[in-house]
Length: 493
Image 1 (cartoon, rainbow, N blue to C red):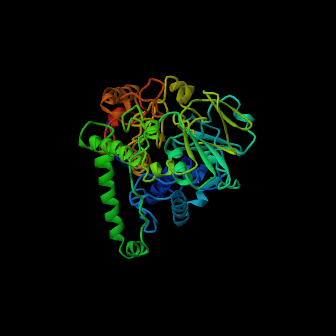
Image 2: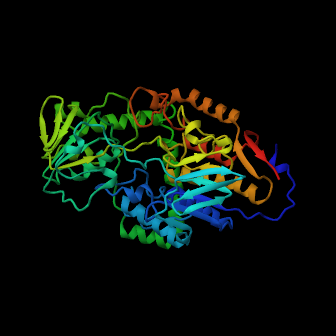
Image 3: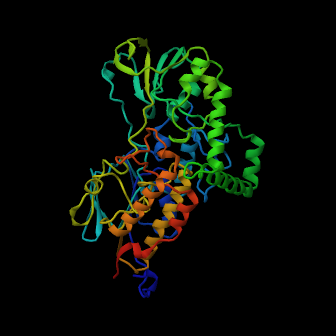
């Protein structure tokens, strides 16, 4: 059925939109609704402020690994970034500014947790502690790195000192005088180590597996440059264009297909370790067994310097258990620490869950995803009409700026909302056949990616394959730019 072929004879329909989440994606969705003249939207946010992961994570050394000029909304440049790679607090401040400048706060219900959403009688019924409300469109913007993952270690709850997850940092605990035990060496663990190494009494890093580190400098942006950015906005626009092309044509390509981009990144990582660490024993500890980029890319300019400072110890023996005084490793050694930090990541496969979503015919999203999360182009699911997901399964989160991904997805969602407002359609949901064909094509393309070269990472789903997009970011942008109406079950007035 061709939606474009339906003659438009009705006035524009008023529709209501429920957005779950006031993080980066939810705010982007709200701004685009505003720009289109849609004012009947509500953002449900369980926290008391916007920002999502940048609100929740406040650990020392927190920095985005995407250049700051590109880690902005294309419609709202920011001339005030202090560094090439934006620090976490500045990113959070940026999202707060966007919410305030665009008048989004009166659309946001802070402290409101959505417990379930049910499709019934052609509308989405959204339930919170305050009651149930009906909306025409449901947009989930709940993020991907949201639910902390705690390690299953015997005796974890017996530790006598302060202990917290890296995303729940307790800033009331002083650090310089502490012997700190850091569990985890992913991106978060690397950033914390780089920041605290040599700055605290002792730092013991419990490493389950070594990580490849790309030497990425993070110079400060001078006051003169910031002033120029404010005075001549085109400089910001040029910076966005330059860094978007740089990221998408090099680091956006390297993980998904063999070529000079992959060779360049892998060579940088190997030489970075070779030239930065002289001690052979330490170098052996820090040498990964897998290929660079098989796990999440990690960019850090001074990690190797930090781990070689006095008081820093990389512990590679497996953790056996935890007791009140500290950590006992498999060799029987007791590592006494005053503070335990769990940099153990997130449940990256939860997506909207634990939110319960029920589509037509009473089928729940949990039932549909019994064998693992799957979606059509990561934004829609068969049997769930007028529901769209931002940062859903297999979004290109491993090789592009998430803000750019969100903008592409929001434009796709807005195309369907425009059809609803124009009265051309009543509901739309992808077909089972189209969704299966799309996911089969992704699985067929996955072996060319570096993510399948033999490593254990949070990218991997139940089937052992990465829940990532196996093509480059430009290809995803094209998919979002051109909706295939024939792939959808569309109901017309």
